[in-house]
Amino acid sequence: MKTQFTIGAFAIIENDCQDILLCYREDLQLWNLPGGGLNNREAPWEGVIREVAEETGLNVSVERLIGIYSKPETNDLVFLFKCKRESGALTITEEAQALRYFKSTEIPSNTIAKQVERIHDYLAGETQIVLKKQPNQSA
Image 1 (cartoon, rainbow, N blue to C red):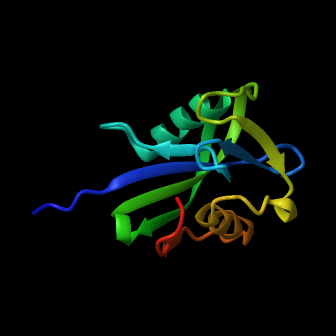
Image 2: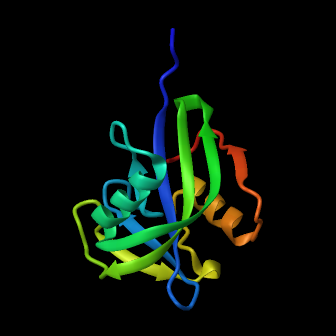
Image 3: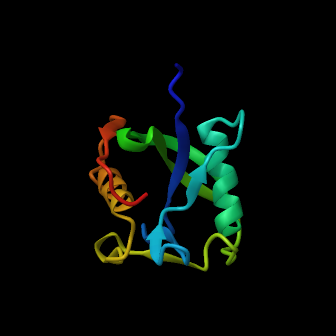
């Protein structure tokens, strides 16, 4: 039997002050990095660009891969990319009821725990790609 995985792609997007963009998910009552699941036949770097546009109204380019995260309990793989804003304006959508840049020292306590861990990995400034298992938690 072939194992099936779901694949997600999320973005770290900073403003000129190096604050990090988060989206508020009303369904979970939590903050999250912009991103989500891939569509059929979509590459992770294509999916993150699409998801960011859908959730935030921003058009971005991918600068680099930060890490790949495995969630073994749910057969999920998540790609985290550093993205750069190219155009567009922050726009509230059905998927994100609030959009806000936060200083890295002021990430809200109601941010999805796995996303906080990914933000910390990015802030660690490693140039090597992070490969990490993330035990079962929210998102």
